[in-house]
Length: 253
Image (cartoon, rainbow, N blue to C red):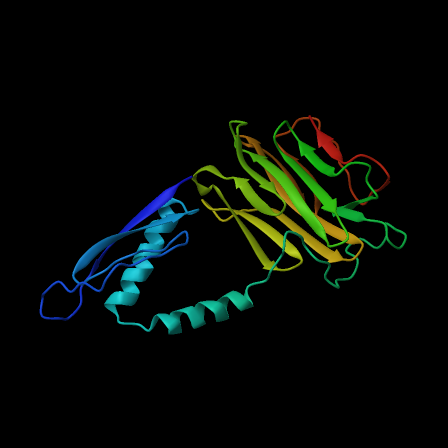
């Protein structure tokens, strides 16, 4: 288990003498025990990484230096936290109109809209597979949908993996995942801001997916409102305004 250590200098405006206040006991994953004044003590916190620890230390020092009331900080954080959409592991349906009404589906059937094409009740959760390491899967439950995805870099190594709407692998923070609302998941490239994936749970039966997959330098595959577009992929066929019923997802290998 990883531990982050914080060292604080706790200085009190007394006469400079060390005042013992008796034995101190504490418990919990981030709890210090200290007795006396002008002490330096260590807090060991489990469950956070080094970068998070450094940011937490900066915040605590800022509060101390500016003599901010910690209770006011907590209240402000609670208020901001209450405004952040909560996914609870799934996307929930919005109330958008059907983005591809020409592809008819029955009540309760799941329709996945990829660009200008639709898959109704696909037989596999893997709706997009481009190459060996570029995949998007949609899983539907009674509570909503969740997204699993993999993205490969131009050298074909996996650089990011999403499972259940959250990153489980993202070396060097190459990508950033955002949830602007409870029905949308968006992935951007941190380097240039390019939108890599956009999944919108449009309504209770329809999910819209746009994506860009980078295969190697100069070669990528795009799914957007203009359809499918393979840049630098020889022999790719055009699929536009097509409806697929109970079929496998779209694959290029």
